[in-house]
Image (cartoon, rainbow, N blue to C red):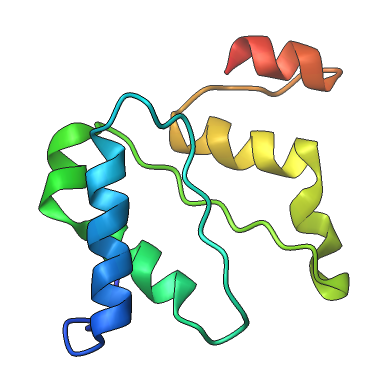
Length: 106
């Protein structure tokens, strides 16, 4: 994934380093990245996605875009999210009649 250079932006680099530290900490089950539009959340996460530590830690990384903005309502669809996940891990979910069936296949 193409990622912008954030090495010159100390706040973004610091956020990236904090996330990397938490990825190896078993006490963390989820990491939430919040900020205003244009704060650099996507830039940080693209750099995280490409980081050598992440590449070494995970076989597969699934990139999902989820937004609560009015023009992105389709991104909140469970069916849409399941389709993206299934496609990335090469699971055939065709014929899945409901989200529970598809979830079991995934």
